[in-house]
Image (tube, rainbow, N blue to C red; front, side, top):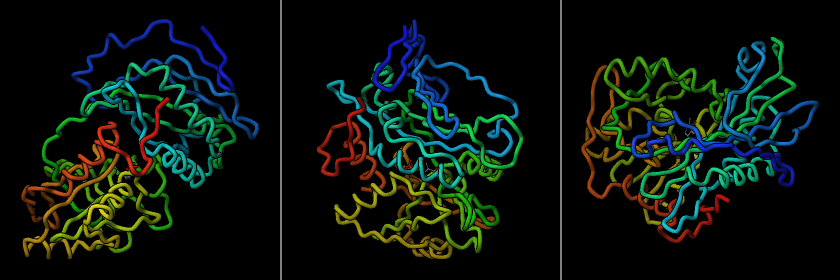
Length: 355
Ligand SMILES: *Cc1c(COP(=O)(O)O)cnc(C)c1O
């Protein structure tokens, strides 16, 4: 069935796959909801967006994305409350960051209407894929790729903007120990680490695999110039608690401006947590650990809100961080989750109806 809804073409799936899905045992990012959004950019303009059954796409093997890596994305979630209402968390921030990433990769900006209305329409269609209950969500992946055929090393003239959705559960993934990078970097100054670009991820896999072979789960990236300041934990922003001071690095061209990070900064300010936004030296972390003042380290990002770090390795030594009672990590996770799942008032206006 094909219906036309304002400026979108909508084709509804004949049958839903939802009954084939075991929502109690999801592995992250492997199952996708019934529909997807596709919008093509040609001749200098975005064409009419389509919402249609989730399916493969056809694309030339010479398409620019395969050769020169013009690919960017976002990661966001829809949450459902006990009344059956579904919510997004700060979606306009994702939209703005999406276009910032586009600009850095010389890709065309998507319109706000196509991004936001596209999300609302897609989520309304696939609303049964958003499950209520603690830890359940629908992970949303907007992305853009250069689709123009031809191996010309210059910005493509044709692109695809798409949105796909994958049901997710938060699960306890065991203790996270990290290796502080001594030589590798995720992003360079002057580079595009602040963009959510596919290439940043590609470059992080090899150092992460090496760290995993040494028994760590993730890499804590250090700055490319000196390797003396920590930047991010894997694909999350990083927070360090020394005594009762919480520290996170300033955003830069090599540190991604995380929406979770800036939400935690706001919550810290409003809840009497002493917070400093400044570069964090590896030496300072080692010193604090020696003096028993390194109370917490955690990553912050949409996937898990916060992900506590229980130990780290640096220059062949291993360091443990004892679990903290009344941790800042637990406070942040609960406070943010309560806002996301409509379990508490939202004085910030962060929670937005999904459709
Ligand atoms: C997506 C991402 C984050 C987290 O951003 P959120 O908006 O909080 O999800 C942090 N660092 C990197 C490198 C990322 O790609």
